[in-house]
Amino acid sequence: MTDDDDREFKAELMRLQQEHRDLDAAIAALQLSPAPDVLQLQRLKKRKLQLRDRIAFIEDQITPDIIA
View 1 (cartoon, one colour):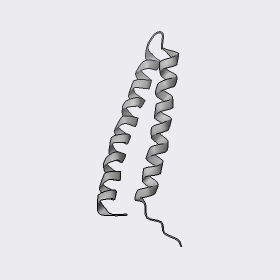
View 2 (cartoon, helix red, strand yellow; view 1 turned 60 degrees about the vertical axis):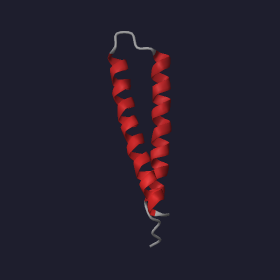
View 3 (cartoon, helix red, strand yellow; view 1 turned 45 degrees about the horizontal axis):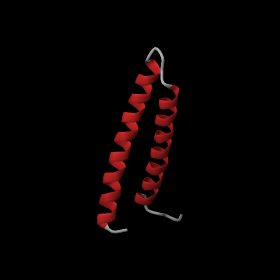
View 4 (cartoon, helix red, strand yellow; view 1 turned 30 degrees about the vertical axis):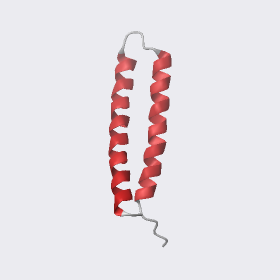
């Protein structure tokens, strides 16, 4: 992997982690509302899971493979 690839992965990782935290806050706020929109909650949680999967993939790409 080149330095440019590494920088791009790290930039995307930071963006995705921020979006994941934002979704966390949005989900918590929605759950505290008197009548939460269940469909909206499901959509936010699904997006959060997708982000988690993408974050894990990028972290695997950044971490060098070390065979011990």
